[in-house]
Image 1 (cartoon, rainbow, N blue to C red):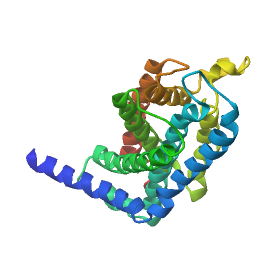
Image 2: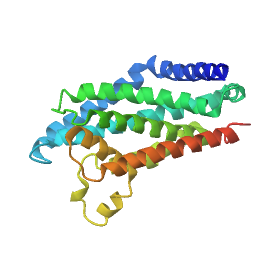
Image 3: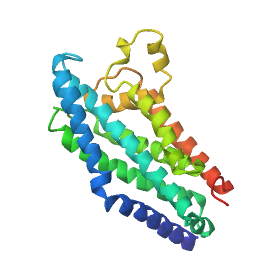
Image 4: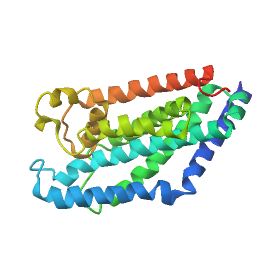
Length: 259
């Protein structure tokens, strides 16, 4: 029993360490660009456009959009880290070595997902460092902010892993981010409160899960919410468990992995 735990722990840290080293050695390509993008968003939308807008008497427009922009950076980078890494493992053929290794499927999944979570956290730190130069943000609910951040990293890392499992070419790894993730993110209330939307768009927005994630993060920072925070946490928890089970099942079956 102890030998199995020790072996699994070594395997987990080896996979996670490889994933972290992979993005850390090219940090100018993986960590810096999201921070620069955040700065551009805050300058253009926050300082130039936002200076003429006011969300409420207590929160400026730039402070209103900053939590959503933070979460958008975390989502895209956690997703991209795992989908590109896992598909590269398939493409180069060394994923087969991991499949025949005497480790459980759950350890393999956790190793890859942990790499995406670490990248998401690193990106969030870089993005928040930049954001504090342009905003007066303070964290109203620190524990909630950390919980939303970790759950979001986990959900999108798992989603990236599932995409990497199904992908048959490098082009397939960009279909979901381009045609699903990006539209849902921009329509998730980053730049506007849902209440200002006309019907039927306001009703349709309540079916966008990313809206609830962004709202939960905004509440953690500003203590303001447009929709239920509890639903946001529920979506994150259910998606984490569901995607984890799905990824383990796919790898156990060898879907898209065995030639």
